[in-house]
Image (spheres, rainbow, N blue to C red):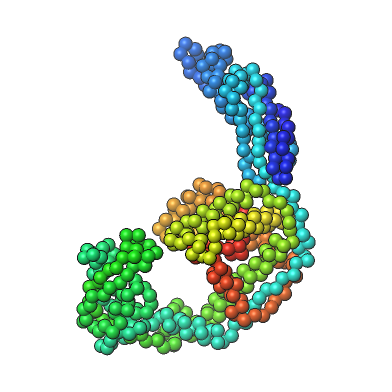
Length: 467
């Protein structure tokens, strides 16, 4: 095998690999020897078929396998000997000239092919101990707990039957039949359907038409399905509903007592408040971590500048862009609807893609240098959490991940990312800064506002993916 570098521009590499005809002949002879003991050919006893006869019958098909294996072996050896670090699976370009191919199959010409790839850049990691970051924190007050209790009471309303007219907040129970152009449609009929007026659970016009209704009333109510309604056959259509009101009930806030606490699975009001406090602490700790992580990734991005493999950026961009287009189509939106143009959106998402790849390579390098790994136990735990999201399909989901190592890699990546982030935060100078609750969650809300309506997360929300 002879290897010659034919291109080394930036991170791009191209190698010409030549495998001699004599080496191919040795490989072919070895394969024919292996075949000799297995071949069953009429007129010959097993193991006694002359190699020349085997070559005549099977030579071409065996040589095809030999060439395939030779390319796999020599390309791996070439990369190993040169200590190359490909960013992705190298592209193999074999001879296309039919005359040349015939000579290779006949054993009268060497096999020459090219390997094209991009290498991972050399990453010089900054002194992580020089990073200075602030971790926002908020103190949980009794008022915070009181407000959380009030929200729980509001979402556990009791309803008391009443004879008067239904108003916003009341619950009405109805039978209804919906028709479009005089014909009933699937999903447009129900009995004993509970509706809380003002909750927005039905199409525009429906709840409004029930306002003022009383028990025993019968009405015809017109409602309009939104243009972006999930069922395309109904989107934008006007429906007429024949409605019978069976009961009207007014909301009653439950009394905060031991009985109510026990209905929620806790022993007392005091324990309920303690549970609320714990959950608030967990939620705010998560928001705090996300914010300090954002600052960390910003600092790492600002502190490092190295070339990234163009193909990795292209692949990342394409994955993002495909989702952008899909979301736009689903929501029947255009770039103009979002105050931008396709050209500007492409530029923005390409910038995000390059940042994600750079941060991914950087965090991977830090993890590798410091022997940070995601253990099998941690991956199994993540797999169990994923399985819980698909009740009734646990076995299928488990088998899917176990039979697709690359999918398990998608579970491993965020675990590894969090461990590397934790490692860096231990080295960095992190000080706590007390902030108001609104400030703690402000960036997340701003991101929601800045995100295009098609729902793709911006840069900070999901900065990178490990490969």
